[in-house]
Length: 186
Image (cartoon, rainbow, N blue to C red; front, side, top):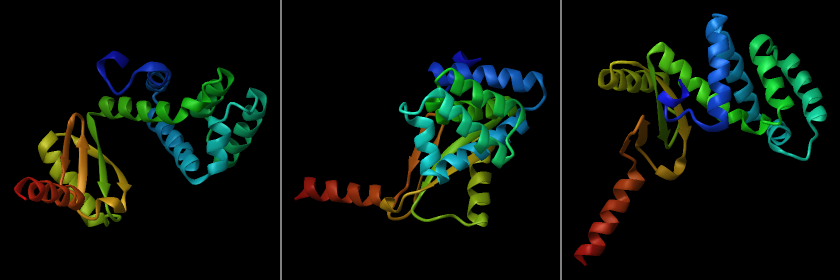
């Protein structure tokens, strides 16, 4: 299955594929995805947790003890907790972000969904998110999950990446185009 999806490859792809197949067989794909998404959110919120996960300075034992405590506090258990502990035991915890992303891609493919990476200058409200989802659904024919990133550097507009396609309607890109056109003319 990993070979069918180019975004799922390497070490992260192999681990994600194994986890996905186990979760699918246990009929707990949604529960595992929810737990992994919760862990991913914790990583995003905590620089200390990110350092623990990524730093080779910590021993597997120290990482394991800390991981057990973090998972218990977050209420993450079952397959997801066992999997995260396996990553730690195999000294692959540093790849957890890529594994979670690859697992999400496998789940989306399994459910017939598409994932779009959207970059905006400021956060979108629910109405705009729904409009964007429905516009992308009309193009793809699939339900679309949005990964929204806020980057004020694009000034305005948005950049949408969906599979191998990208639409850049950011104000920054338009201004750069005008700048280049003026250089060529002058």
